[in-house]
Image (cartoon, rainbow, N blue to C red; front, side, top):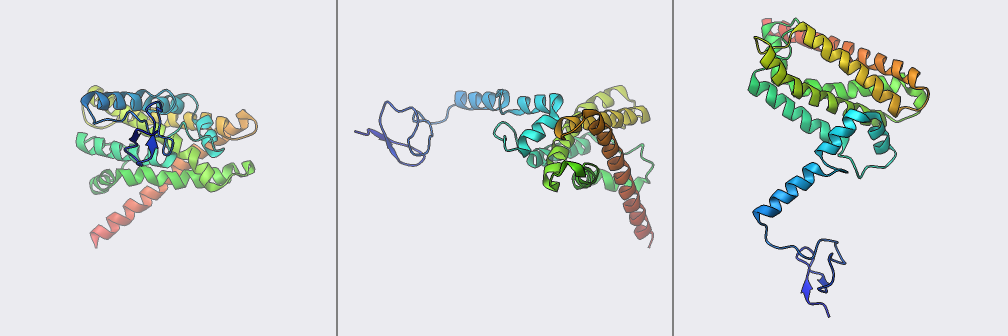
Amino acid sequence: MPDTRCLNCDAAFTASMRFCPSCSQRTDTARLAVGDLVRELMHSFLNVERGPLAMLRSLVTRPGGMARDYVEGRRRRYYGPFATLVVLVGVTALIINVAEYKMLAQDGYTVGATELLQRHFNLLLLLQLPLLGLICAIVFRSARLTLPEHLVLVAYALSFRTIALIATIPVALTVNASAAPTPLQVAGFWVVWYFYFAWAATQFYPGRASVNGVKGLIVAALGHASLAALVRLGTQTYEWAARL
């Protein structure tokens, strides 16, 4: 005879059952205690299959393989690429604004344009998702993937770049005399990004790795140049409108 009911769905179960036969929630659920919260946080963070550390490890060691898994339906182990990117972009924009880090100080914009871009740095980061996705769809058109499938790779790759950006801010603030990156740091960051994306492309796209690597470099370079051109056009339009 059933002797108790599930707190989640009210289905009956026996004392010998560890999980509810209806909804699969654990049957030993009790009132929350501090220990429960600590265990939940530790499990979520350190989960070797699906946690922040596992996600970071995949972004560092096999970004293209992770994107390929996601596209082919093996998704249980991974956080969604687009939600991951949006969260990381929000965190990055918050850190940059709180730390008053002048991310765009070396880009040659006027003070007003730089301040505008700093305030909307999250949008500037997210703009690169469709831009790089479209370039990937053109350069890698022989892969016969849909635009959303290209965007999965781009979103994961940009997530890594966003994490790298977050990591470089405290280093730059410590090393530099001012709260802005040096030209050498900016150049180094972009070089690392170019080769990271090229490496991710060799894992994601079918065909010869050397060819895909070169194409990945082309995509990264075109994406960088296209973004710079769009931002330059936007800032010039803003400055023209401000003078009216």
